[in-house]
Image 1: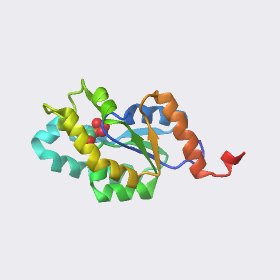
Image 2: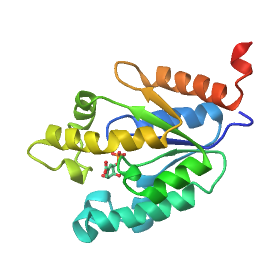
Image 3: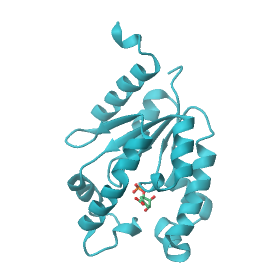
Image 4: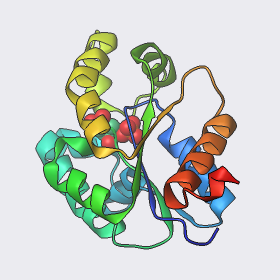
Amino acid sequence: MQGFPNLFLIGPMGAGKSTIGRLLAAELQRDFVDSDHEIQARCGADIPWIFDVEGEAGFRLRECAIIDELSQRGDIVLATGGGVVMHEDNRQVLRERGTVIYLYATVEQQLRRTAKDRNRPLLRSSDPEAVLRGLFETRDPLYRATADLLVRTDRRGPRSVVNDILRRVTRLVDPLQTKA
Ligand code: S3P
């Protein structure tokens, strides 16, 4: 689709950023990039390993560098990691270089969708629900402040979320079109 900006997906673990991003990119016939996958590919190690060896701070440095690099590309759909908004630099470059979409998910949904996952070091806890609630309190205001659009992802399938995003981004980009 012509005239569409870069689309940057932000939101918590389990919101469906990768699934929805892949579908969106296919629909728009553009590249899908996942910042966590890029970090792992460049580092040659998975995220738990990076957290174990370099700490969360080391991971965040890698994340900032990759977000700066990937967001400079054109015509992409980018799925980011849930903690991307913790750095002001990330928030700024995402806002400046594309349309930012907050995939909102309730903590219950996050918990369900991450229950079997072993690749998220922050959830290696005896009480992942408490962790997700704490992260939500800190990050929800940052997601909202960074995003151009908030899209709910609970109680609906990825296809419906994608259609909603396409409709709402079209309206943002070309407000006259939706009046027709
Ligand atoms: C993180 C979310 C993860 C990954 C890392 C840290 C976070 O990405 O970047 O484990 O701080 O919320 P997903 O949101 O894709 O799970």
